[in-house]
Image 1 (cartoon, rainbow, N blue to C red):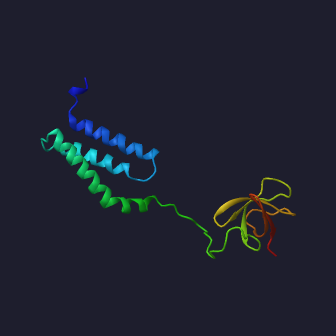
Image 2: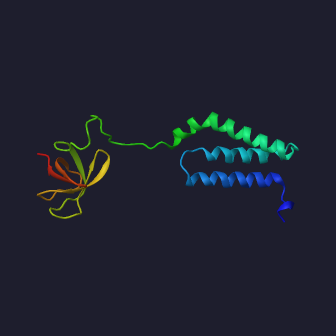
Image 3: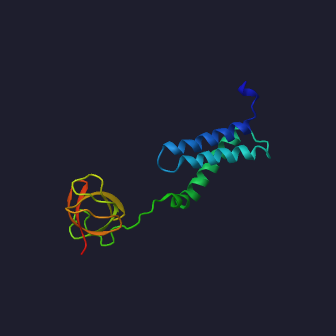
Length: 151
């Protein structure tokens, strides 16, 4: 049954399967071998090429694509951070820093949250603090920040 399938379609399907494998592996390398397989299959639509030449073409295309485009393509998948730590100080020193309340803080309740250095933190305070209020960080207790409203 499989012997009746033209080799160009096998290359294209194999290339798509290889590119899908990139979703499960880190490194952004396998996708270029998938592209090499797809390009080899597409070339078979226009050129009658033997199996050995197809394998060499696949390897050459994959390596050329990998060397040429990996660094450029990786730039599109870099994460972006907002409100990073501009001072460069150690992140463990929280006392005196400011944050913004993103969920109302109710004393002795686990509901309150603040945004601190671009990350959402659980927050607690002695008084109730409304969303959007700027607060000063007093201390850190595990993953909870003790805060007070700025005067």
